[in-house]
Image 1: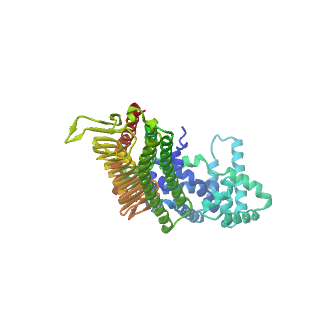
Image 2: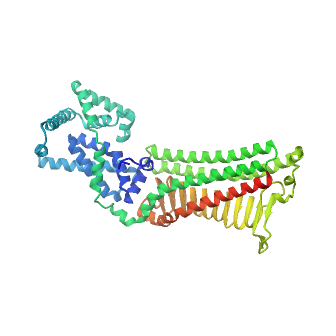
Image 3: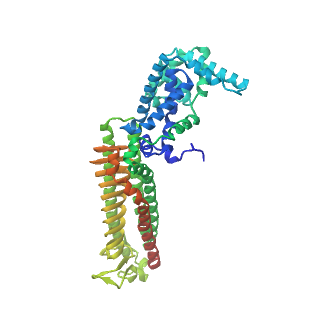
Length: 540
């Protein structure tokens, strides 16, 4: 694979995350920054100095300087403006040097005095230099206000929208400046200028030059201070997405086997339709929640919002969406239990012929399994396999499973309460669920001392979509905390710096993330498969 064939996870990463990865010493991430902004910087430099070669030299120097001083960038979201500031300083210094030592022509001549260069190559070089000189003679007569957008226009695939975005102008203003710029060009030179500018666009070689320049330069000073903290922050940007997909994948598998168990427990068409309806409601709610969170993040990061008040509104909206998801799931679970019980009661009355089998008799031993071994008066194992009916009590044991399961050690079910609990709604010391409450909570929404999930709320919160923490919050979306926050949209006393990384303890979590992923897979998938198998064996 070519050095510059970027992974999707890098090319689709926003500026703030690329800065964090670069601070951790990731040169590939910094090269993505170079690729993203080299055309802008080279075009602005050329518009100022009027020489393709020198404009690229100055731009490369600006990127190398940015690599060295990346730790001084206080707001990663303003990366583009910061790079342009470095470039304009380099341009100013170049002009001062040119005024005192006007030897550009001499240096150009020396470069061409190369032994063994054949006449054809020399002639091509001379022609290119004459073209560039003629091009600049035309462009130099224009005001920079019109020259900069015109140069960018032909280097950005003639896209008005891209030029507007690069220069932070409105589309209408960009169109007006381009129109005025074209009129200022001599008619006879238009075709020539357009073609030459297109050919002069910096390519992969420019990025390679920057990479070569920074290859022997250590990461910025801040990276040494942050140590593994910021490096792990970069890893967590990728890890957060991975864990979200893993949790979702585990949830899909669990939902499938839960649906199959519900269908095996059903005895009438109405009960089967209700099973499909219940699963669809849970899945639809989750999809709306995820889509809504991604939409809020997109608008927060892509609408050129630079004031804290506007970003705070989006952040508050994200947390309201999280709370709405939690409230909806609590209601759906309550409604599922009540509706299932009512339908079963009615079907027993109006369709008694569907319940003639021994397994369908109330009180049948096939409805549950309770181990003969007890500890402190509580069964070691207690599992319920029949459909929830009115008057049914929850499964209670050291290890319990069912629609409602209370375990002294482990519980799995629709509502699970135990030291280690797994369910749609789970409560425990360690809880895993669509909504998990615990000291260590893991789930679509995790609420606990330490929350870890798609959205997390806790003393320390780590979420892929949002994190709301008291001490610290880390998220690839919205991060809100009192002391420290890491993320593209972050609010706290310490934001996206070495102190925030240390407070968030990313190093410790980075070392244990593989165990966390394995734990999620085991406690979510295996019990759902076991329960579904036993329901089919006993109740089908």
